[in-house]
Image (cartoon, rainbow, N blue to C red; front, top):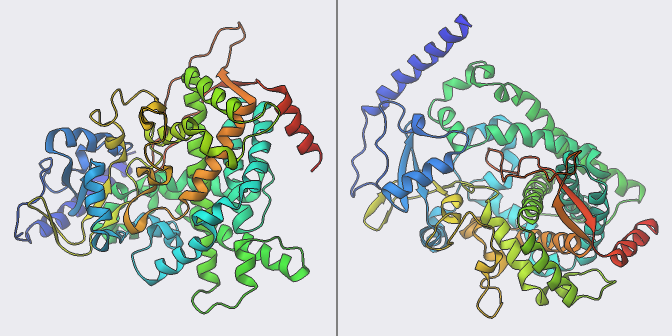
Length: 509
């Protein structure tokens, strides 16, 4: 214990000396800087942050200093945008200057430099997005309707027999199976699929490590990387395991498609199409990176949204009943809803918009980096600053979303019951040139799954051994992306004709 204390003291002294030397070189700015909390000596605002849920701190600061504020961590400027209007003004209308990404050293330490999400703006990013566009753009995403329905129907059957501890696994298996079918032509074998198992392990470690706040100390003081990583906590000691998992996930599914193509058993997929054609603008490394990024991001975000949906349905049975009535009115009693029915179900679309607003999956979005000095509303924003959109603050803006903590899909509908804005315009998908290229695939897969679940199942509170209702609270994990913490619920059949129809289809497979 004593040696650990001495080591921590030594690190603090070294950091302090380096920070002091940096503070002697202050830059003179042509305009006033954005308002923000006064920085503490040496460390800036890092000691004032809720490091597990920094969006809560940024939201509290926003109420004091305004909709766009400046924070500073170890000499690094953080610009926090607490307003969707300002986010669109800067990241959409000035996208040429706000489309790059800062260097997230912890992402590179875990081997994540391949990830499209964190690539700086440039040619490699353009190659990645071009490939994503080929398979995930709006018209192509709609063409996967049978794939969505098949996997959604399987999810419904699996949920009927799922216990609360398997709920997370079933939603992850649905999301992973879909994106793996498109990228690798791989049919995932439930939540025990080895690719899914490894991806979950990688997420559990990386989600804690890869955040701008935790990365800042390594960016400001690179020499710290030479210290044993266990000095920074248990999760950091697993960085070697992260690198191993990344290499396995990059290579094994890709090589499996190669082998299938050699023996003529490969299914149609993004990787199979790539390997069957000559390419001048992309190599195998690029294709591996794109495929794994799509798989990892698609699995995690879709699963989180589905888990939040199920949580909301337990807590708000009136919303669930209204959505089911809309489905029953639009679709025959013995038929399953599909994407062709979507236009007649605006309330279900409103539910999905509310799912992403109620508890944003990535509360601070993915940070942008400003390429050149800028001025906004008379305030100076320096080149190289890290810019983050606080989606949590926007989701809790009472002027836009009254009674913001309540799950209320009606807030997204006009007085005559029509959807106010297209789902793909939701702030959860990001902004500007870094908007999520898979947003159409995500919305179609979410819509199909939620429609299938509500068409067949009632989601309700679980009961204890005495028959009493087990209360559920909306509690979420921390990290760069968040999920509902495990909660107990029960599933009952509300439409036996549809349930028989699903089982017959499953038995015929």
